[in-house]
Length: 361
Image (cartoon, rainbow, N blue to C red; front, side, top):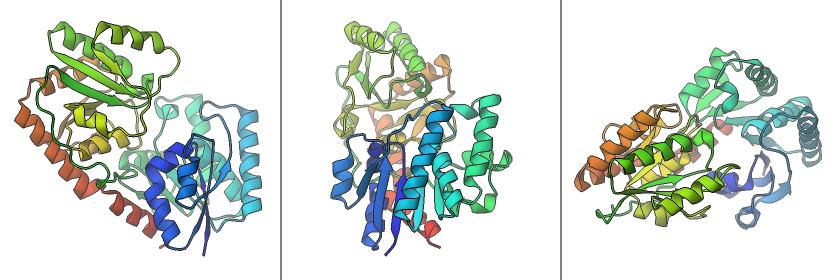
């Protein structure tokens, strides 16, 4: 029986996207400890058999003092628990957890769930992050990536040796949970759906602008928005709700009822590791409009959705207008092709099996 320590930046993310992996590891006789900031999903993780150790830290930004304290917390944690294996997710656990594991000579695996804003442009921040990744990942047993472009970036920047890297199809999607949902008949208005944190990097500014253009063109459409908003968006959202074209539902623990009402899912993100919401909506039989970037475009095959250029209102608007103009049957068939793609490539069971095979070769 092995003790496995998971370091992550949110108990919610661990539960939502890794619970199937955790269940499989527990069924194989392993003890699982999850260390993350509290995000309200601790009871569910305990229910499936995890021990929870709350480790709070600021997920965003670089603060040398706070980040050193996080490294010290991880070092104490690994030293005290003496896990047989550590699995890290997201940038700060990857880097500072990696430092702690390397220092203590503890075996660890790293999951790169996206490149983040640091890799968007060359500069001092990018150089610092690359140097930290190089040091943190040097002794990792395996480094998982959610798309091949991110892996190629790490190899090109000489952060890792490609022989240690494995590309998974994101976290996969539970196709038994996100089942094929009957495509909605054309109602009074066409409904686009956005699910995610309302922030600049998710492309919401372009999405709101494209929706205004659609409405100005006389298109009878609305945008359903699910997710918490970042500072600065509250008044904007209220205004669009008052204008009658945006329906805001806040954070929802179960998005399936909203997917069922949607005619198309839209995610014009700037960067992703692998956008889970794309996978969930495609698995439910909804056509997708998403950015032509690594981590988004993989969810779309020919005839299952449309790609737009990131940070480009006109490109997004053209894709939304094209989707709106299709017939009911054409959109329904797109959704069915997306579902088939999820079954063939992104089935969570396949991803879990592949992950465990690489963790314990």
